[in-house]
Each structure stands twice: as C-alpha cells, then as structure tokens.
Amino acid sequence: MLSMETLVDEVITKQSLIQGTFSQPRPNNLSDCSKVMVKPLILKGELQYQFSSYCGNKVLHDNMRPDAAAAQIQRLLSEAFRQGLLQTKDADYQVLISKKGKLGILTKPPTKKQAAELTHNRKKNYLLEEGTPVPFLIELGIMNASGKVLAPKYDKFRQINRFVELIADIVPHLPTDRTLNIIDFGCGKSYLTFALYHYLKEIQGFDLRVIGLDLKEDVIRHCSDLAERFGYEGLQFLVGDIAQYDGLEQVDMVVTLHACDTATDAALEKAIRWQAGVILSVPCCQHELFRQVEAPVLAPLLQHGILKERFSALATDAIRASLLDLLGYKTQLLEFIDMEHTPKNILIRAVKAAAPKADELAAAARSYMEFRSLLSAEPYLEKAMSKELQPLLAVAGKMAE
Image 1 (cartoon, rainbow, N blue to C red):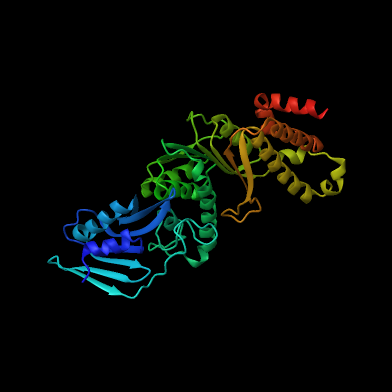
Image 2 (cartoon, rainbow, N blue to C red):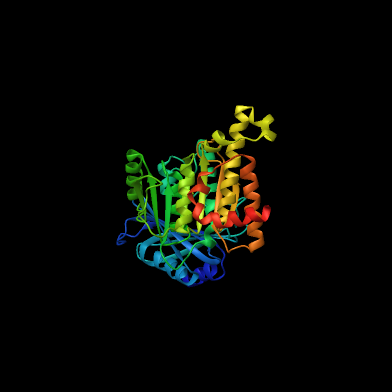
C-alpha cells in the first residue's frame, strides 16, 4: 500500500497532480474551513500550487512552491481533514483516515484529463476557471456556490475573462518589489474592478492597492460593502471626479472604462503625469471631434451623420493613441466587448516604453500633425499636454516645411 510520503512524492515531486480536494474536517480542526482545493499553475514563470480554502462565505487563496505544497498536503491530511482526493493524469488517489487515525489510500482509474499546459493559454483556457468558486462571480449570479457557470451568464463569464486576459498580458510590466497602486476612474458597478483585483492579488500574488472612483454615492457604497464582504482589504471605493482626484502621488496602472467624451482624456492626462506604467482605457461618447471635424476630401463620408459619428470616434482614438506614443508609451488598440454588449468595443492599452530614436519620434510627430490638420482637430489631450508636446511638435513642423 502507498504511504503518505510516497503519494505526495508521486503527485508533487513528479508534477503529476491535476487537482486535489480535502474534505470532512476533523473534530479538532480549529479553522472554519469546510474544504480545501489545490491545483498547479504557473506564476511569473514558476511552477506553484494554489490552495483554495472554503471558510464560511469566503474563499482564501494561498500560492506555494512545490516543497511547501508537499508539506501543506501532508499537514491537511494529518491534522485538518479526514478525506482527500488527489487526481492525476494516471490515477485518482482516494485518501481516507479513520477516527482512530488509520490511513487508507485507494487507487482508482483517472477521472480528470491533464490540461494541455499550465501556462495561461489565452485562446482556450480561461484565467478565471469554471469549477473554482470566485466570490464576486457568485455575487453577480454568474457562478453558483460550487463554481459552476450558469448557462444564461456564460457570455458575461467569457467577457470578464477577456478583460482578465488583457490584464495578464501586462503583468510583466508591473513592478514586483513594492505595493502596486492602481486607480479605476469611473468604476461604476465595478464588475471588472473586482476581476482585476482578484486576478492580480489572489491569482498572481501581487501586493496591491486598488482604488475605484465614481461620482455615484450609492454605487460606491454598494461596491465598498462587497469588497468588505469578500475580504478584499486592498480594494477601496471612493466618491470622486477624475480630473480632481489627487489622493496618490504615484500610480502604476490607470484604468478608465466608459468615461464619457473628454473625461477619457482627463484620465489619460492624469495617467501620463503620474508616469503610470500601464494605461487601460475604453473610451465612450467621443463628441469632441464630431463637433470639430471638417475635411472637404471626406465630404462623402461626413455628410452622413451616422458615418460621421463612427468615423469621429475612431479618429479620436487614433489621435489618443498617437499622442500616447509621442508621450513615451507603446500603444495598442484592441477589441474589447464589455458587459453591456455596447458598440464601444475598442480598448486602448498603453505601456510605458523606452524612448524611440529621434528620427522615429520626429516621423511619428509629423504623421500626427498631418492627420490632426486634415481633420481640423484641436484635441483636448494635446492641449492638456501642450507643454510636454510643444517642443516635439515644433521641431516636426519645421522639418515638414
């Protein structure tokens, strides 16, 4: 018969574990946890094991390296629980411990398939996995208490995971030697704010402080209550305005989803002045350029209101991306479908970058100026950052003469 040490060596040292479940708490177990689940995952390029403890109405996560995980599995079975199920690609191991402490291990055919890879596969593997209960998803009615995604809510589950994928891509650009400061301007009901916090804190293990800011007091009060209920100590919600917020001197990431018209530009200005390493923005209601745009060569397009509106929105985001590039960022425009299925489905993702070569920067500035002049545009963000942009645009203008 397998010993406990041999079993742990099989599932951890040989890296064969797919999932483990520990249940039936011992009478002398001092915690209020009804069960613990463990699974392997890759964090920052390193194999670790995530232990999810179901305690009351909370789910607590702890990530451990293999040696610590092996010791934790033995502790859970010798001190805390009387039953364990360790599922590997080759076999299921049912661990049973009698009231007198006698150990029994049953080997059964495997019931769980090995994942193709442990690393996060953006195309097929959801980062917030079905089958693993997540408090805020349960609160939203997307999951039930056991982690099963409800069929009518699967689109929302997929949309939230899409946002988390966009967050996962920028993890390498975040500092790991200090507390991260993240601001979400116009957080609203904060579904995605909770997703961001959960992924970076509970899954990636970052030490972080996230502040959600919105003008609606009732929304902020509700979100604050949820954060407290979930035990998200580093997540805070405040009533406040984008342009006037000055509660932090250093911010590592700025998120702004559906800030209307030039409120998006106000948030971008804040992020740039903070020298934020990452900016994520989904603009909304781009009215500024719609009122300004004049270009005879585009008359066949601009004479139709619906086309002018859509063109103005796209051109506005192109202008923002160009300005962010000129101000020291590497910018991408990505498809993003939000919770409400709106047509506002472009996300601006900007990451602080090394300074480009002088000739490349000058060429980008000339290209921006030609585009802005063609449309007769006077962008809010350019005016807000005029002191920083003026020397660069002046040189580009002279080179174009």
